[in-house]
Image (cartoon, rainbow, N blue to C red; front, side, top):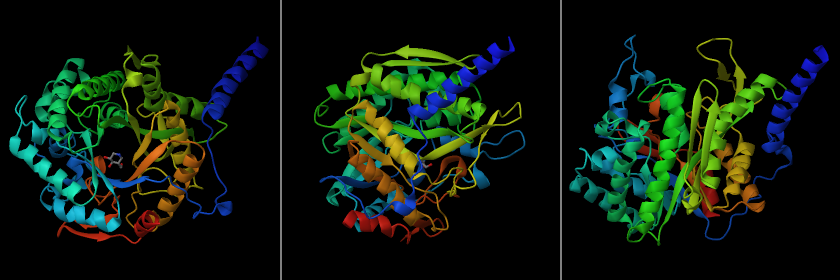
Length: 461
Ligand code: IFM
């Protein structure tokens, strides 16, 4: 009996730990043997930078994040670090021309930005022509500067009226989102050659419905599954519909997927491995499987039980956008309200966010997403580094990893640094400095950071 139990434990251990290791092994390179100047990028490789409307524009007073920023919990605390509100942000709405000049100085040839649904459709079914005209002028200015516009239709924010209808918790609301996407597409598809439908489905669903740190601040794992399912379905329907609109066959449309690996804090530890595997299923593998096969399933007994299928999903991306920052190293916590924690290992270099610098993970993520068989754009990659003492080496190491992945067969067509300038970093408010340009939020002055010059240099080479 005892022998049988020990055997069962060993088999489970081997299946989980080894299975995990074999599928996506945690790489570590010996950086002393690596020549960081050994970079090769294909001809016509696209160098760019990225932003999102709520984080930079200012004046977003009608969306779910605006409401969230004004809210307080039962202890009268704001959900945002240092009680920040997005407010005027970088005032990009008015300063876009000067900001496009900054892109030219960097040497980037492409710019990924998002449009603000709550400004374009302030009431259900009512579109604001003046706002559409303003975006049209921004797009013209981008093109006029010799930069290619890449437009994201949904980057975490939606109008308050949409939230009140249940947002993406309800599948019947997908049609409303689709109507908004069609309207924007029909305005700009003649001038915008690449479109991202939805940004980081998995991040929004887990932050908003698992940790509860983003609006609507719920902690309900079942809703995590439901919202991921609805956002995936929304992507497929929007893709299918936009492809049938004028210019649909001429432009590229794709989803933006964030990959964070969930590596075990201790590689030998069964529980760390199981936790990593479960997190990876929700965050990565269930979504990648849907994109590849059209079948979606998450089953975590007692927490999430959701399934869906759409045979059109495998043919619903002209490219895939990959956002990559780092991995999380996970371990259990003996606390009934928080069963696990992410802990940076002592031998890793932290960023200002709660994760480390991990360029090998960038290589892993690219090789993993490459299995979809689609052209890849790195739609975001960057570091929060207020002291600017890691940004330069971050850029060198991550671009080395990218070049190596391309050398090993990954079909990466372009890279967008996150972000053009410091901006409103969601629950972290203005504390996280992701910008190539530092922003003084009192004076709105922008200044290129020293570490960012590495990006400028590599582009010019
Ligand atoms: O600022 C965010 C962005 O909105 C989505 N991807 C990650 C970035 C940095 O955290």
